[in-house]
Image (cartoon, rainbow, N blue to C red; front, side):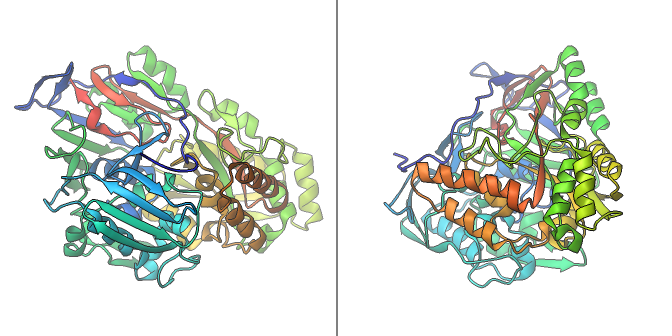
Length: 556
């Protein structure tokens, strides 16, 4: 039984399993009917950007996670179409009264893709690997790990703090016991993070997984991350043809769970939104993600299945306090008042988009309905800039190219609207477009080159710490590594509150103070992202977490 004093994940909205699909797919010897669904063939899905690599621990973005989720499993996972926690590689779990010791009862007979056994020793090897990771370059790319576990055995990267991890013990082959230094409200939900997927210890050692080198403004990873990712998932790695922009995954016939219905999955990277749409219509791909809001009705009218996920996300305007002018709260408030977010929602947001007043959806525990709101008020913005001596301010505004995100379907258009709003109150904006991976994310999150940027988040599990704690629970280069000790302490206290009522009250106060006292960024909107597939695909289950697994999909 999955024992816990509280559930970290609450069901959001189950997206119905969809019957949709593709023509022109290759047949195989397995082609036939299985439970009413066609088996065999190839499913081609259009990715919106290049993955960074395939080592789960070094990633934090959806385009990298899309193939990773097909190849790897986590100890805990989500029931398809919901945010409900269910067993993954662990059949069940429980914790002690203080929430520090977690015992996982593991599935038996599971194998990694390289044929080695999945067991408690493998689980502990992964946790020990993460904790003992060496080198600032490697640690800097373990964003989720630092957000959840705080730090490492030896912190070498800026922003790392006290380590939450204590030890992992293999009581027997099927029982792993994880000990933490203190309770954290993120668990058990955080055990479902794709970054914390369990990889083959043999492959990690064989293929130099821990070697990460910084080369100027980019990073280089070992062979495990780029050529030999080995997990337990329903698909195995078949290659990444960067010239063609295709990632090939093959059916894992030995998968412990529901085996993939297609023989092959191809994720075809198509960075241009219009090209993705054209290839969908041409039948060269059978699925696309994050269609432009204006295209949804047209695609539905043409017979495609357009599925809206619930809006479990946030788009924000990040403010880098490395710029001395931006350290002044009045300047940050002026920026917030300058943005006509309601107009942005109406003109650029998908149907159902709402202006965000906080950095998490209102379905998450700790949402405070009485936070200070920054309704559009350009006169107030000008007044605050004058009071702060910041008239004539010039800011470098970074935004990503060649990508669409669940919370940001068209970065160029969003940037243009926000930049125009800022310029209308006297702030000069220098737009800096940068490619998503190997450019924008490194510039913003690792090097802090920007003054302003647009970025966002889709929740990984239903807990305030996964939103507010991830953004502002510690100093981050993205926001100027701001030394807001009071904010960090308040978030740590809220996240460590075990009592449900006390936890709710603590997070509500954190949200009030973020809006009124700290304002490290400006929340923009919550937008429901869509996924589109052709009518001949069956079994696609849309996730509110954008956590789709393609083993359920059949074609033809």
